[in-house]
Image (cartoon, rainbow, N blue to C red; front, side, top):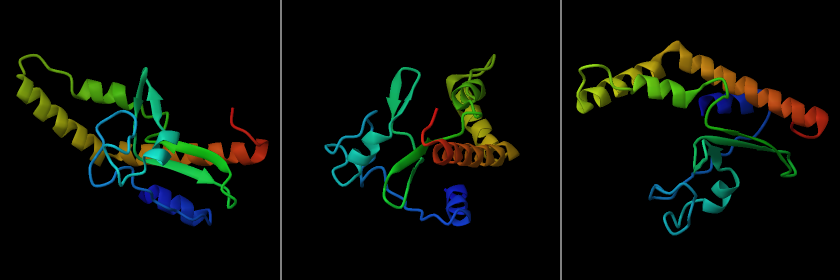
Length: 145
């Protein structure tokens, strides 16, 4: 979110943050007002993340509109260059001689260390590059490939 705030500021854009869920966090893959009646299920349903044959309510989702509320582009969760599922699967995979509890504890530690590493800043910058590239493409050509 800090990168999105800086992007909005630099581009002279208005940043609005919409909560995904209400007081209860939805556990389903698709949003429902039954699970989170004070949430934004209708808005979230427009921007679901479809990957690996499944549907997810990923966060963050950054949606860009013109001042007349014409849709331009939306960015979901992380940049394409960050192969999150592959990296986390490797970090959290069992090592020889580890118990299930040891594997979980080590995997959690290694994931937290990754989040504190320079790579997370690099991936945040890649996310901004991806957003700017897609917005430029949309504004110059009138559509996205």
